[in-house]
Length: 385
Image (cartoon, rainbow, N blue to C red):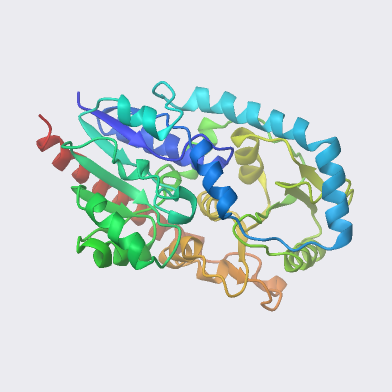
């Protein structure tokens, strides 16, 4: 049995990152390979030092009241909630992933890389220069003269500088097969090195909603009908429009609102039920059992579609989120995308009427993606020594 080492973002406290790593591992194993996740610590001290020079995160303007509230939250509850969240993610990671020993630094990986027949760059924003800061680990630069495959990798942007293209060119040329999560990435690879690549689905979509439901089969956390809100602000800030949208939808659906609160914004806000300490198991439970979902997250959109939930995908005006748009257009759900400042949607449009067509397109996309991965690994196997 040939071995496959997967290099992907897998150990941050983000449910999409962890579950896409698990889905990639699962499908590669189903295809008949022995696989494990290369347990590279990202981010590590190198990245934190680079982030101090220039933060990769969006600036978030807050009024005085919110600044005061978040300052109080930070002094009272934030550390405890963060520790509990970390524990929940680590617990689930140990259950779900097969990992190598830890590689805490770039140097440790180069000095003693794990040995496999085939090396696979996984999904998420592994090639985003804003986050990677010239750390080329996810371009597999720690190993040479071996078959390399990329599956649903993402640049996380639609444009690169000439300097960025220059250093990526020889790294991309080492891959036998490349697929990208976004259609824009296909054009970018062609522009950088002339290689043809394919657009394949995010690994979380390789497994059906039914399969995810069996993996996380707990009883519902919330017993009543509810609107789930998962609003992130680290890429761009959708407030205060997000608040208007939540209130608008709640008013017409007349259901309770449940918030996955990343920052403490909803601390002491008793109008809503909010969660600040949660792991991937709790998140999937809340997505699976929601009546309606409002999300600004790519994986929020992906799981909304996979569980066939009525939803809206929210993103700030003037900021192109090709990650979400690419997926929603491909499956015929582009009308679920809302930009900040757009007119609030009519209640008559809340319910998705064309789930049958969306499901057909999603299933076809899933089959196409698995076929790419099957062929890429078979071709790589022919090159193994």
